[in-house]
Image 1 (cartoon, rainbow, N blue to C red):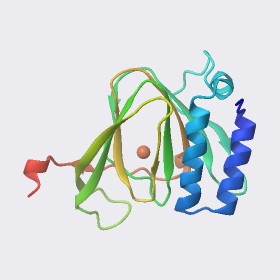
Image 2 (cartoon, protein in one colour; image 1 turned 135 degrees about the vertical axis):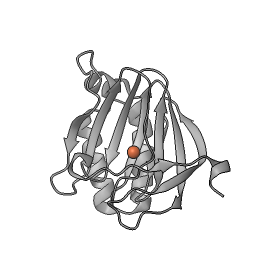
Image 3 (cartoon, protein in one colour; image 1 turned 180 degrees about the horizontal axis):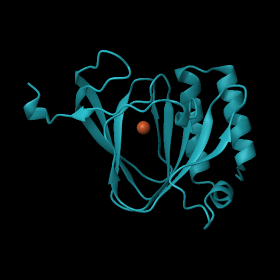
Length: 174
Ligand SMILES: [Fe+2]
């Protein structure tokens, strides 16, 4: 189809300007799924020289959303987290991400505190897959090898305080 970053960003803006709510984000996820496997987009934004764990490809002046590339070289496991008062869409370009969703066992008193949570399910994101994490959705990605992702964030998450939570295993969380 030939999606440049500019064209993708422009369509993201149109979608979110028309509907910044959950329905708009779902539309944006559907668009992202097409872009993840678009050879023009991948060649433009994942050249050999892009080996950065996080790059802001585009940040929207008016609406505040950000499009990021992520190039991870090795395995890693994140701790459970949400993204403050913001949403994010994870899209897989290369490799696989095993995603875990969580629910609070002991919710924190404020958004700045850590709580405890347990996993409710896991699933694998493969190239072309994209998943929306709405405000407050707890999740943690695990990768066993090199991966590449595009994420669209409701706001550049570099600007918010990150809070991570402790996982308790199901049989220890009566
Ligand atoms: Fe996240």
